[in-house]
Amino acid sequence: MRTFALCLVVVISTLLGLRMAKRLRGREQSILCFLSACSHLKDAMLYWGMELPAAWEKTARAAQEPWKGVFLQALEQAQAHELCAYTARLIQKRAKALQLLDEDVQACANFFMGLGMQSADQLQMRFDFIQRTMNMALQQAGENRRGRDKLYRSAGLICGLAIALLLA
Image: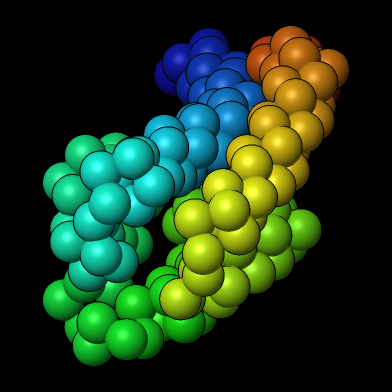
């Protein structure tokens, strides 16, 4: 029975380390999904010439979770003229679920707040800016993950073994 309990301690601490490592990958995935959604929105607005509500609906259908939920909820809850402002507020509320850092949330919210009625050139510059900003965030998230991923996995296992040895 004691051996089983010690093994359970090792397994639980290892799983905790793996969970922490997975959380690091979540930010990268969220940023990638955001960039994909922005690309769909950009194509719909600039290249297909769609109005904002139609472009939003097309983006909502193409987006991946967790961003799909953001676009769909904004589409369902907000009037056409307030889609951008509602989405910016929604991103700030869902920051934890989107697994973004505060600076990522601020960049995304600012992007949506300024999407209103702009010329095609201004929209192009706005989309280019958010893509550069989020690509830098993606690069930072990748470096952060590579540095800590193995650390968290190893630390979970080592801590579990250390606790098991102390209890033995």
